[in-house]
Length: 304
Length: 246
Image (cartoon, rainbow over all chains, first blue to last red; front, side):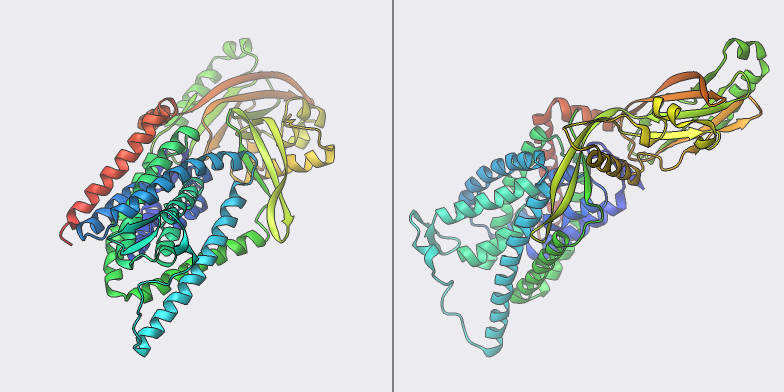
C-alpha cells in the first residue's frame, strides 16, 4: 500500500516504512541508541530526498527518545545533572550543525562531509569499544576483578571540575560540554541523535557507569532532536511529519522486541556486538567513498 | 471510464464534419488536473483530437522549469569527491514526446530544434563560461539522470490514429511527477513542416490533507516545526504507556 509523503513529494510503500521503523526500533531497544545511523541511509536508499531523510529522521527521533527515556526514567537510570550540561553543548552544536548543513549543501560537499566525518568517528569508536569489550570478556573468564571504576588520563586534569553524583564522577564540565557540542553538530548535519557516538563516548571518555548511559543519552537527545527538527523546518523546510510518524509506529514496536533481547544478553557481549555493527557501518562508508559510484554525476534542484 | 468519455467526444467530433472544417486542428486532454493524494501511484491522461486531413501529429509535454546544478565526481586522494559543477536554468522538470510515426520520417532536424522536439533539442541556459564540449557532457549527464528517474521519456510514445483524422495517445505520469503547471504542445506535421499547432495546459497539484500540510509547512515553518516535535513527543509518550510496569 503506497502512501504519498507530502513534503518528500514521493509515494512509498507504507509497509516498507513500518519495517524500516521496526528494525531501527530493535537496534534502539537493544543498545539504547536512536538508530538514526541506520535510518537515514536507508531512507535515502528507498528514494526519499537526502535533505528530507535527514530532517524527518530527527523528527522521528524525538518520539523514539521520549519513549525510551520514560522507560529508563521509571527505573531511575538517568543522570539529570550530566544530561543538562550535555544539553547546553548539544543545543549550541545543533544550531551550528544546521547552519553548516546549509553551507556544505550550497557548495555541493554535504554528502562527502557526512560520510567522511562519520566514517572517521565510527572507526575510532568501534575499535575502542571492541578492544574494551574483548578485554572485559577475557577478564570475566579469568576471574580477575576490576579495581577502578574507570581509568584516569589527561582528560581528568582539565579545569572546572564538577561532581556528578548519579554517575559517581568528578570530572571537568568542559568534557560533557564538548561531547554535547560534537554530537549536536552531528545531529544537525546528519539528522542523527548521535546516540551511536554519545553512548560509547560516555562510557569510554567520560567513564560513566553503563547503567545510566542509555537513559541520560536518550534524555538529552530528545531536546537536541527537537531543536534540529524545528531548525530544519525553518531553514530548509524538509521535515515530513507523515514520514516521521509512520517510522515512529514501527520503531515503538521494534523497541519492545529489542529491550527483551537486550535483557538476555551480557553487557560486554552487547558492547562487542555494538562495536561490530559500528565497524561494519564504518567499513561500508569507507568502501562507498573509495569505490566508483554508480554515476559520477549528480543533480540538485535549486530552490525557485 | 476516461476512455469511454474520450470515445464519445471523438465520435461527436467525427459526426460533425462542419465543426471539423471550421476547427482546422484541435486537441485536448481528458483532464486538465492531476490531483496528488495520499494514495498517489502515478496517473495518466488521454490526449485526443482531430486533424483537418492527412498528416502526422507530434506532442511535446513539458513540466514546470527550474534550475538544476549538475555535479561531477572525480578521484581526489582515493576518494570520490564532487569537483566540477554546471548550473542549468530553464530545465523542464518533466519531458515526454509522443508522435504518430517515427520522428526521423516526419520531422527534419531543423524542425526538431525549432520546436524543442526531443531531449537533445531542449534549450537550456547554462551558468558560466564552460567550454562547449564540457557543457555538452554535463547536459548529457543531466538528461541521463532525469531519464533514469523516469522524468524524461527515453523513447517517443505512440500517437494512434483512428481513421484519417482522429488521434489519441495515453500520456503516463510516474508517481514522482513534480507538481506545477505543465504545457502540452501538439503539432500537425505535413510534408516535413509544421502546418498547425496548439497548446493546452495541465496542472499537477497536491490536494486534500497533503496539500494543507505542505502549505502549512511553507507558510508557518516555525509552528509546523513545533507541532512536528509535539506530535512526535506525544506519540512517544503514548507508546510508552502500555509498558509502564514492564
